Image (tube, rainbow, N blue to C red; front, top):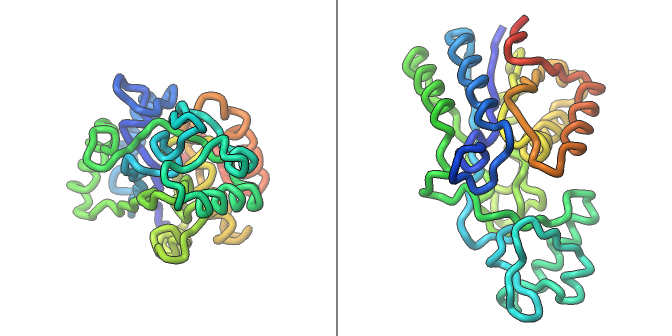
Length: 265
């Protein structure tokens, strides 16, 4: 039986270590448990896929993209609605970006995605925050050394015009940017596995969106192969209900939810 791991955004900026840009409470302990699980399973793991949230400072979900009528940027965690962009309560820093930004928030609304949230700049290319949490990075290296197999890394989020919570596709795919469109290679690879173990941060956002997209493309008959290690993933503060609803929905669809000490059972 083939066993593969999909580890979503296990990065320093999502840890609760000092200096993290977007700390997720419990993420550092989650990382310790994940690393322990990787070491314990060792050679039983056939492949490991790791996604990395990847941004630059100028991004539609970062403060410097937007200004109010006085030219001030929004505070982190501000939510920007369609009505606020239409009224120019919030507008892009360049007037020529107005229509594209308005189209974006309207598409989020029409597709029942999250309201646009302004996040602290995080997972910036070349920074400590973009790197994998050290304890997980060390466990991944040990697995590579033992198996002589490369980790399969997938970068997401580099397009400045769309949020990219899911590892499978951006919230609003850009027709001119293949990196925002459905990651067919990842889906097909995971679908061939007998069991796919899921972990990472944050449970309420990137994990939830990735898993929902995977199950939608797998089809209901393949959802049973997914196993979420619950104590290696935590929600963004204030979004706990989103995470709990995700867990309930996926359990109903057939995904298994276990603790790290219980796996593989």
